[in-house]
Image (cartoon, rainbow, N blue to C red; front, top):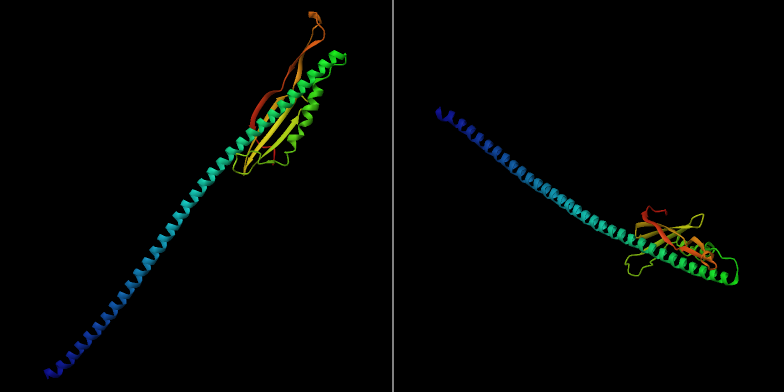
Length: 231
């Protein structure tokens, strides 16, 4: 009786352990698979984020370097444009001075000739008009169409613009020059007074004949940097 009763109990105990062991083994396998998949996912995400961070840092450094190079080039072009405007203004003022001196010299010859022949004394303004003002178109031809690459020692493509205007009374001239280097533009402006007779003194009071004429040559009134008149 004890053996018959004990055998069923023994079978139930063995079945229970087998099922428990099987169930435990299945759970451990599932758990190991889950951990293996989770580790791979975390590593892939970390690598992706790290790669994105490196790309962003690289792009930021490249952008910074490009901006620095562009800033340096822009400064160089601006400086070059300033020198171009300065050189163009010097060239225009020197040419005006040269023309003015020629007009004064021709006027003096005309006055001497009038004194010898008894003819009417010529007007200095007529000589200035014919020998200075009439030649201003040599500059104004570069108003709408710039003078390209006038300087040989400049590496970049460059140009100059000129605009010379006479006052209504033809006593002053306004010179505007723009230096252009790449996209940089610098404009200078100057106002000069044309030659004129400032004093006429008769020599008869001193026992002489004729008159003494005092002439003021070309002189610079102002020179400054200004905003562009070209658009």
